[in-house]
Amino acid sequence: MVKVGIIGSGNTIGIARSHIGAYKCCPDVQITAVYDLLDGRAQGYIEKMELADAKACASLEELFSLCDAVSICTPNCTHVELAVAALKAGKHVLCEKPFAPTPAECDEAIKYAKLSGKVAMIGLCYRDIPGFVYMKKLLDEGKLGKIYFVREEQGGDRIAHPDVKLEWRMQKDLSGPGALADFGSHMMDICDYLLRDHCGKIMEVACMQDICIPEREIIGKPGKMGKVTNDDVACWICRTESGTLYNFTASRIGATFMLEIVGEGGKMIFNGDRPFELTLQLKELTGGYASRPEVVPVPEECFGGDENAPRIPFAINFYYEIRQFIDAIEKGEESLLTFERGRYIQTLIAAAQEAADNAEHVYILDDED
Ligand SMILES: NC(=O)c1ccc[n+]([C@@H]2O[C@H](COP(=O)([O-])OP(=O)(O)OC[C@H]3O[C@@H](n4cnc5c(N)ncnc54)[C@H](O)[C@@H]3O)[C@@H](O)[C@H]2O)c1
Image (cartoon, rainbow, N blue to C red):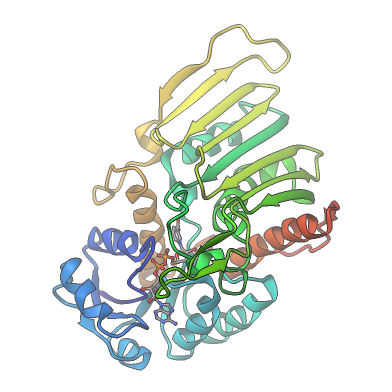
């Protein structure tokens, strides 16, 4: 039995809920502790989430004394400090994305992950969305041949209302970039993961951003407005080693979730509203389009095989992320979602941010990962 502690219960999105939902599907896991910086929040949360075996902890030290592993579900600027503390205490760590506001900040956590020998995973959990698993299978079978271009859009609409207050994620010092990092971390992880073998690494990036709602009310200060200091919307284009263009749009004030990959073998479209399906329009590598696009279900083999996995959109990929974490702890199975991978993705985000700040193309010479 792996005993898990949750750090950060939730105030805005509350992603800890998705971690807890997934842990609850694992018969070999017990959630034993919850800690939140704000007094009293952990106890109320334990009751709400019906965590019968969990204690509301008054300190991180108390949480560490009650668990083998932690999920870090707190704002981006706290991830590294909390990960280092957990690793020093001998705990396995699953840390939410984006890893940190800047790539350099990740190094401290990577150092302690190596020193401790504990499992250290970053929560880039979209890879296990069934539609993406199927896309990878088709790509690796060579169905699309040479890739011509890729288009991905992602985001959310929770904070589209201008009355939503000034959250930590809207402030550069607490979050790093805005939509660019929040959604862009998943977006670039997915594209690079699916396409690295076909298109090579991302080598060049150009980016523009906009802050559409520039002021919001400060939490706890009725009527007092504060500035939003990072992007609501980011549009960026990357070129890979093979010359392929990836075109990304991330928005936190209303967005569509889709990924389109076009190649000499036709096109595949993932629609985030229907993650158990793909739209395919395949053709001969050397010919033209001879059929209409067709919606096909993701085959069972791409997401089945584990009877504990919830067949529910997004719960299923959080489950597979958490399962990887627990299997790495219990069986020593290696996860691809290493802290180094988390840092590499931050390198791509930092390059896009630099491109936007300086209105220039940025070339990524960093040969990590
Ligand atoms: N994987 C995904 O798809 C996904 C989705 C949403 C959010 N996230 C990530 O999850 C993280 C949390 O986001 P959220 O929207 O759930 O946050 P949130 O604002 O809902 O909750 C954060 C909680 O952490 C607590 N907290 C802050 N600093 C702390 C500290 N030092 N120690 C303990 N508790 C602390 C806060 O009091 C709050 O309860 C972010 O990094 C975010 O980018 C990931």
